[in-house]
Image (tube, rainbow, N blue to C red):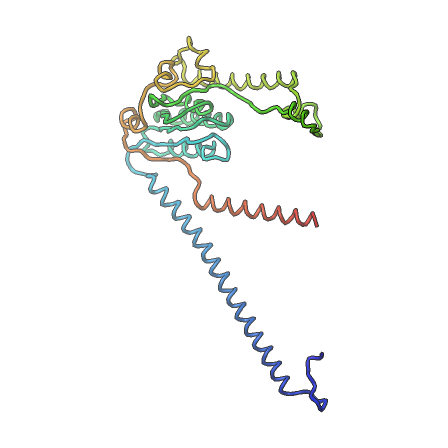
Length: 326
């Protein structure tokens, strides 16, 4: 059918043309309204997005102000080491070191207090922080560093604590676990019983040495043990350097056995210097009861940006995957 409906006389029907033109005009108006509504929606969305960033920035700023940074009186600078030591965790080397640097740099810092509650984690993170504490102690020789253990200070966490001038803990705190471990599972017999074939392609004779579906290889076990012994020796050297003659070396087999101790037991072994809380150390040992927290924490803005970035990356990956399949 043509755009024009002919009349019975064969001539165009002017009434029909008027109706058609009216419908086209109304549709154009509806389209304009839709476009205007979408325009307003996206402008509001952009405004909300910018407002969120502004609020996040101000919240982070208020958080910093509330923590007491930049106060004009002598104080004890606190840096928290809380949770597992790992690159992508709150207790990462970057976060801890940023807090330490800010704490030492403040001219009103009377002493730095490491408030510790960690089961350990990455030996690399522990090594970075330990080295930085020694560097800062040398740079600011008049600012002592004290470690205060809350619930637990084990493994790599004690690696860090040993760099402090003195270590304090509660009588019931858990201290120690000085050692190195690498663990896994073996499923060789299980897959044999189930008739499962393991297919692993690799270049490099020992590239699959941690494959849980193949039997242990004596050469590989020896290599791993050598590596663990090397890291363990580094750990022992760091502890001996930090604790010095305070360690009861007659009990070194106990101290470096991987066992854990209560605060009371650790004090007898020379692993800590005394019993006391963070407030006790600030008030009685450092002599500055006012405590200021310098712990570097991820801001709301950083968290939002990271989540947005992760979402966009996942979306991009999904789109690329779809395109490859098509």
